[in-house]
Length: 505
Image: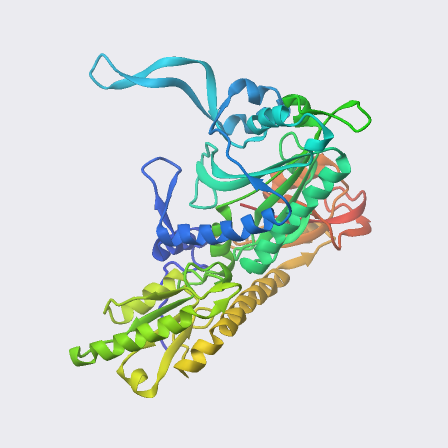
């Protein structure tokens, strides 16, 4: 039997990085920009981001967070106040040195009007927000201060990939100030739990919650907590981080307050963020060799209706039937909001169906004269093979659409969790560890083991050696299931915990 052709070429097992790029292109999520390393997010991709944004924003506000906006440009002197922070970001900063263009000697435009102080295009906003906090906070009565902003940031990346690593990307960054360390630490954990909930309940992406090692910690932070997800090439993707900054940034920005005892103290601060990288994670968690698969809870549209008209005499009746079904679907509620419906009126034959398969819409519905006569619809689910379709009475479909979407959502999470479990191994022998992370096929170096739960003594030299030998890093020290006695996978010294090792994006 001839092998069925797929919509995306090459497939995941042939060339994973190229498969990813082809899925982004075929699904209409985004495209490369004329500006090196940047991307244009197309309407389908931006609608997906808006849905992610809406859910996160709602979760933030439920904990008392308020949105604000701060400048894109940060004076260089602000970054220099926190030495470790500026060192961590220095190589990624884009810098503005002039404030206008002038006609040059050859007739072109050249920079003119040098700035008295260079401005950094924000790589993150701790320092510029800290300056505002230093003016907003005077007393313990002003605390806690809970602020978030939705914005873009710029990090001058050398090697870029759409959504995963671009020179400019969209994100949110939360910043809070507190009267006690305990309160700030609690906020750090609370925000991480929100990211985990978004990933698992909305993106259907299983994650491991844990703490970063000192080497992987956010520059200037006392503690960095993270969620790590496994992609289908078995690499890890950091999907969200939350940082306890201690008093480091408060000292640098002079965020002080008068306590109830009328003494003066520096505030305790946090920061936390998630970005459009989540879309890249969604692609690599669920996509297949036919394109994108979008979990219903964040899908730009839940259902696409595709009327089929081969004879002009059938057009009006089929279109009216389609419009009626769309109207009834729009009255149904899925996860607190109306079911979102597209009607694709183009008559493109099978190409139209494949276009929506590649875009990842959860439900595809074909409606023709025969369906009209039977008062039915012809239904395809994106979590099933493309040719696996079924006929349903249209009223039954309308009444059960929310349940079907929930079933797809749960199925995607279950598949991703099963995949992660199959490729997570407890490893205690160094020889097995090295073999696990050594590509079996040198022509496909991206194919490797997965997650290794192995012991680590806590020594940065061991962490560095494994990274140098295998390009494997400690993704996190997990909050659950890691505490036990053992021997370090690198040096053999006593260890009290297992950590998650993996190759990563």
